[in-house]
Length: 311
Image (cartoon, rainbow, N blue to C red):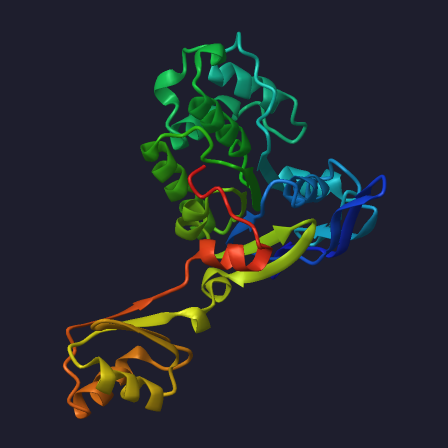
């Protein structure tokens, strides 16, 4: 069943004792998107993921996933969902392929006839083919993370839920996972990525949501979340006095000058319209650029908290 939204929660909430871990959550995850799920520790991300996967029941609201309500429809929904959440329970004394075979055997919907081929393909997709003979106890954290991702890919999925998918990976492994996620989305799979690495979200995702203290504070496309209205134009000129007059007449706000360099909030004004105005006023332009707001700046503005951008 194809739906416009892969996940659409309505008034979703989870209460532990007297505390709301998640309150009145209205997530809208477009089908086919790579959706970043952001928030500081304790913001309700993990609890939300557990509700979406039917691991815990909500105390309020609904959590439709792939068009069906969870956890009631878990039997029909979960075979279409792959997940990497806190890693599956791998046996350290078994090899990677043996672990995948054990997990695949426990899946009632998995075909035993295609098991070996599917395991080989999933290991190749995550770059673990060469480690096939190694026992998992000898795997690095990054290799275990790759194996968890391989497990999520053992069957075609309509939705992948990935919690910190690049955790423990080196830069090359991170790039490979980023490429894999994009390929999966291009094939029609919706990828829901929970991460604390804003740089990765910016490079990987098409949409994102920001949580703070159990509440959704923003969601949408990455461009919308950054907020174009916050873009600032930076102008370098030997004629700063005349340049200030031009920028003011063009409707730019928050104009600041430091020596030959001026900055101003661009607003809805197309930056390409400024150059003719400056030239007509005989302002000599030595440099002109636009500084778009970063996702990190937007996150801090929304939550009032810093963010571990380095990981």
